[in-house]
Length: 302
Image (cartoon, rainbow, N blue to C red; front, side):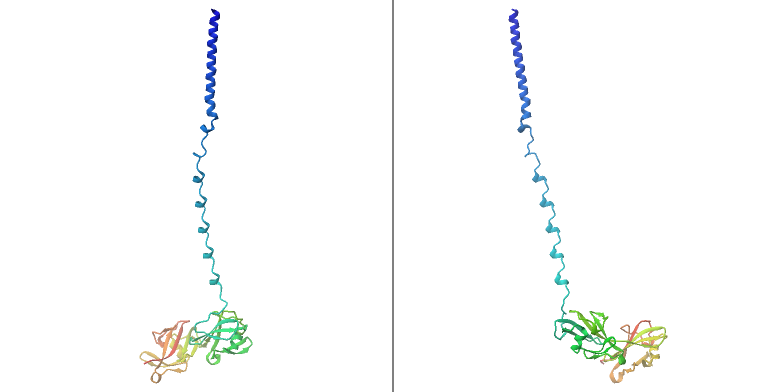
């Protein structure tokens, strides 16, 4: 009986052990499978991962366009056609073309009355003087300092009789060389201007300028030095004006030896102060140092 009971207990214990082993095996299988399944537990790389196309900034959108931001070379580069100086003289519409040659320059002659004559000179000479002498546009005498020009385009300038000379200019600036030693630059502008020099008259602490213009445009210029207080007194003292006293002051009949007769030629002397018609007579105009006064012989149309 005891043996029978022991056998039953052994059988039950075997069943319990088998059941325990089965449970243990089942628990191991349940925990092993999730650990080994990459499909179930590994985060999908395609779905949740941010799209590189969506989050990466577009190089096309954020990179500044070189076409838009780079200055256009066509717009900013100076035009060589606009900035390059012309090697040829530009012919004025009223210019007279003279000479033949491969080099051209502009030449202008201005008389004392402002009359201008323009020329386009073409030459193979190397100096302005030689080119103008060849075309007989200038005349002069050779001296210690080169050619002294006495006539330009047939117009004389006599220092002895009218205190006049020919001033030479290069591109609008007073020349630092004589016309015979000035080398030609293609396209440049050269000019002679007949100029009247001032003749000094009188003595005194105050100085002013006085100009006399005849009806033919002849000009005489003076620098007056005086201690008088009015222009009229200063000019009368130097015998530069003559006239008759009347109800309205001094009526000027002659200036620098030139008469203006109203009865025979309808002429009179117009008086100017700094280029403006004077509002006072010459005898009542007070001297301003450095000012310019002028008498112009005028023919009335009446």
